[in-house]
Length: 394
Image (tube, rainbow, N blue to C red):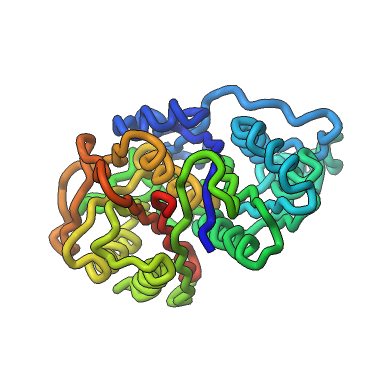
């Protein structure tokens, strides 16, 4: 059964709505990634923050107040009309919520715990539930008074890509008629210090697939889709999903990308497509030595004839649990717009040990005629792999 992605709310370091994000994305604007001090002791790190004004959580839902939920709220408000129309059409019990996150409200929780360690009591606004992984879904359920299935998936950097896969299954099973799905993650010191301890964070803008790559930038943002069984609004569909879990290592990927290859091939099979049918591939492309090496080998195995591809992380950072949905949203924006592709931004210093890939440039576009299909890859700690295929609705 075809799952239609009929509406999108989005924010990230590129902007606070579809139009601003698309304009800066397709122009290759990296100005949202900045090297900053204060996140990690005694060093600067590249971060990609959402700089616009975020809405306040309604007073009646103050217990849900966190930066993570405010990012989510800002994205949801962009598609409020579509949500209310779906409620009128299907009813509150037939609309689900499936989100991905890795931070939830951990930043507010860390501040509360820090206050406790210093003063031996929690601040008045401390809420334990803010840090629970279910918090974003529960916030939307209460905000919108929904009564369908609602849950959060947290599989590190594949979380929100897996949320889209899970939403598709809810539709296929007939459990829901529409699902709000996507992901959200916020910048916080705990996450940045954790990745810094792994020696995985770059002090400068990340440089994916370069021989000089030296780590990731952390970003934040939210992307929320309305997924339905009916082609309401933009005729864009989730054509295929592929998931695998190779469990090669707790943090390092399989060096030849066996799990990544399996995920991409499963997505192609579900969509009924060959590799040559894919017009563009959004790479996971974190700019760490191991991930980029693995992904280069995996892409070369699945696409031996090549495919236009790019990593968008130099523009938005690695948004962790939100990355899969945000990068699928970039594919959605290509399809909804005039077919521009996100360009690959790096120093051009190819790694001689990696297979050469076909990089998308600022002038590259999707075909103007015929069906258009785009793939987005997400890979995570523990060997979790997801590939999604978006395209024109059939």
